[in-house]
Image (cartoon, rainbow, N blue to C red; front, side, top):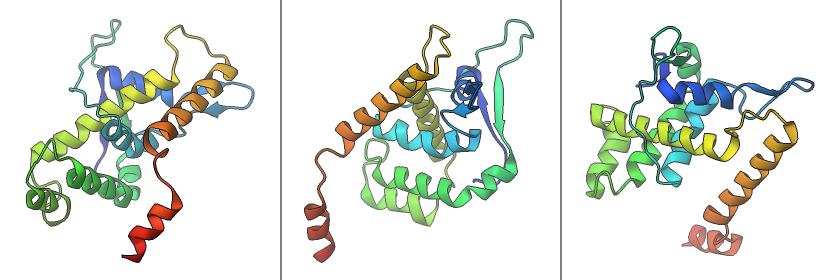
Length: 179
């Protein structure tokens, strides 16, 4: 499944370009370094925030072509273990998509990526995660102020911490490990 080039399309391609572009010319800082990093992390963000998105075909008005940007095949293959783990994790945990626990285990471990609907579900989380990252980290006013980027990144990390880590403590984790 993760053995070839991956293509972001439409508005998601534009958003990936913005997430991976330099926002401070002096330091050459980026929010996310590479397209493959977006591809690897966006499905987890999409899943955790409960966001999916349909394939988009927004076109460049100058050329009439659908916007697209790629993750080269060698980068996908190099990251295939991480991508495969993320795929399995989502298939295993997404009880809204598949309610039967045994079938979720099959989708995650026995037959990963064999059903095109599973791959599309994963990709919908990729697109949803891109939307979340864009909404949280990029401003629509075109501002390229480095301080604004850092502030939005900090707010996103704080929001993530509050939503997903605030109820976890090390004692509870130790109790689970001892059982």
